Structures are given as structure tokens and as C-alpha cells.
Length: 545
Image 1 (tube, rainbow, N blue to C red):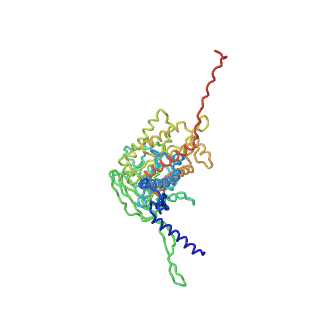
Image 2 (image 1 turned 60 degrees about the vertical axis):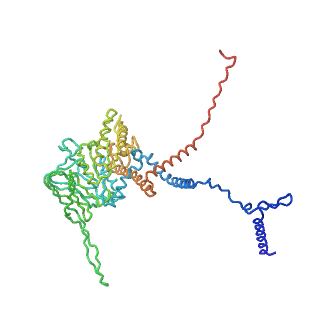
Image 3 (image 1 turned 90 degrees about the vertical axis):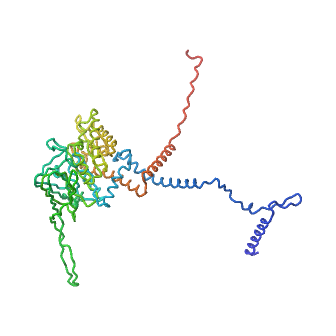
């Protein structure tokens, strides 16, 4: 028989059997005492036994969502653990209020909005002599301006007490300097000191000049020049007339003609510096100060301000059109305990005029030699007052306190870390966190007790032989470590932004990661063996009574 005939026979057989199943009585056919039965189609092809009452659509959907959530959280938790390990264990980590890793978010948002809003965000970096010559601040400034835009050295005092490594600054004429952090005879008879804790009294005619300091070929601070926005903060008393002259680059061109085609081309001939007088400044008259602002049509790295009149000059500022500025405010010999003595309303207006969004207070080194357990509470109280004073003047800014570096002195003929250093650091950290400020521990960053001795002995040296101050190289290295730590938080900020992880979701993910860690710990723990107490042998009858 051919394959086709065989297939037709099989199909015909199934058709006949199916027809019999359809017409055969379900109860069967009685034949005598017997009953013939034939299976129905339902018996041959039974339906799946599904109880619809056992299926809860809402529960099934919840289980699906939860499975997706676990998968997503598992992917995020690995990345977040990388950040968490640094935030909790990294030697260069920040100590943050409530251990909140999102503490810097407001600051980063301000930096990112600066370009969109065409504004300059100022970071005011206060500190003691470790900051002199624009050390540490210059490295932080260059890093942030490279990332977020910006130019110029930021705010500068009208009279510079110690030269800067990045900006040449000079003055002449009828200016007298008053400072709040020096000897008593250098203080004024009032509290109108402004944001730099100093001012210059103008009585007559004067000039203030500044320009980017010439660097070698390996220019470490290229962004400190090329400013377009210049400001002067002055007092309300008396009178003031200002004129700004700046160096502008003038480009000369010449025409060249092709002898064959006659085509004329304009090519650059030379570039020359030319002194240009800027148009009159915009004046913002506030309650406690006047703010004079020049917006230059081109960039410059050298400018002179000519002043005449009689008033107080609190600061001059040189910035880019937008981005970030870092103001280096070094106070030799200061412990940072002078802010409560500045007119708070004047301070508030100055911070607002300069759009200051981060205040860095780098103090403590000058407190260490005199700190002891008997006066530690006074130290905490006076530093707390300074933080609160700045918070009152600038509630929209974040405050970061940088504690002292390792410091050593000779004890029994050899250099050892100051005995009171760790006590001082502990107190400063507590005060900062209690007042909602972040804390960065330079002592821990360096490596703890004895680190300064190692820094001094390095080749080239990172610390001076006084075993207290950094060399320029050491200060730059400390600035790099600070920037690396800050960048970790910025990376964390961008990671959450890319994956749309808000605060609530972040807490959920962290809780999920913690629960996984707990499960892992339980699995790795070995069950404790039950100790079997041995029964004491009964004393033998022949023993001693």
C-alpha cells in the first residue's frame, strides 16, 4: 500500500472513532447483564484542572513587580556598595551630618545651574596660614573650574598681606588696611569688616591692580586668568568714584592677494595688548554696601581699578562670565573665632552679592597648642558660635569644616604629634556635625599620628621643617586629595540622576542591600556546637571523708 493510501486510512479510522464517541450514549448500551461503554471526547482530551479561585490577579501582579524590583535593586546595590564603602571607610572620606551621603546635592545642583543661569557660584575658603599664597585653594579652584566652568581668582582683599602664587596683586595711594584677625592695633573701631574679615579705608585717590601671575610652560592654573566680570564691594558711608582700565588683546590683520587668481585673503598679522577703559559699572545699592560690577566685552588677565573718595573697600573680585569661583581667605594666626564680631547684616549682603553657596572653614591648627581637657568645652562653644554666625548670614549656603593636619613638636629630643591634637579634632568634628556642617579630617587623610614627620622627610618634601605647615607641593597634594573625595560625591550624585534614584528609592535600595548582607552573614556563620557538660564522677567509697 502506498504512503498516501496509508495516511488516508488512518485519518478515516480516527474520523470513525470520533463519530462513534460523539453519538455513543454517555450512559452506555445495555446488552443483557452487561453495559457497553465508549469513551467520550472529553475523556480522551481532558481539560486542564484549573481552579480560578486560586489565582489572585492583583497578587500575581505584585509578585511580578517585586521580582522586577529585586532584579533592579540587585543591579544598583553592587554599584552603590562601591560608593558606600568609600563614604564609610575611605581614609579621605567626609564626615557628614546624619551620615547622609546626599549632603552635597544642593551644592552640586548650584554648580550645574551656574552655566544655565549665567551666574558665578562662589566658594569662600577661609583658613589660617596653611592657605597663604593661595595654597590648597588654587588646586581646588582649578579642578572645579575645569569641571563646571569659571575663571579668575575670585574675591581678593584691596590690600594683599601675603603674595599669591597665582595672581599678582598691588596697590598704591590713600588706602589703609584694617584686619580682624591680627594685633589689636590693626583693628578698626567698628565691626564693618565684610566677607574677608578685613577692609581698606580710602581717603583720597588710590589704585588697585591685579593680573594672572606668569607661569612656566607647565601652567598649573590656566583658569585663574581670563576674567570678564569684575566687582568692587564698598561701604555706604562717604563717596566713591571708580574707573576700570584693563588689558585687551587687539588683533591686527593684513590683506594678501594671489598673483595668479587675484583672490584677496585677510590674514592675522599680529596680536597686541592695549589698555582699554571699561564703561561705567552697574551699581547695586544695598542697605549696608554698594556693589559695583563691570561686564567686559572680552576677557582679560590684567586690570587696574582707580578709586577716589572716602569710604571702606571690602573686596574686589575677578571672575568669569559663569561657573565657579574659589576665594582664598588666609588669616595668619587665626583660629576662626572672629566671625561673630563682623556686622552680620553686612556679611549677609556680601554673601548674597557674591552668590556664595559653599563656605569652607579650615581651622584648628592654632587651637591645638593651648587645648586641654580643662578648656575643651570652651573650644566647642566658640567654634559652634562661628558656624551659627555664618549660617545666620547665609542660610542658603552649605558649610564644610576642615580640621587641622597632623602637627609635630619636639618631645624628649624627637618630633612627635602634639598630644592635644586628637582631642581638638574630636571636638571640632562633633561641633561641625551637631550644627549641620560637614567635616573633613586632614589628620586622618595624611595617615594619622606621625604623618607630618613622614611628609617632611619625603623627597621632595611635602611638609616644612617646622612640622606644621605644608610646602607648596604638599598643599597641592592635599588639594588634590580633597578634590578626589569631592568628586566621589559628585559621581554618586550623577549616578543617582542617571538612574532616577530619588531619596526614597535610595533608602529602599540601601535597605535591600543591608538585608542581603545580613543573609550572607547568617549563611557564613557556623552553628555553635552545644557544649556537653561532663558529669562529675561520684566519689569512691574509699575516698577521703
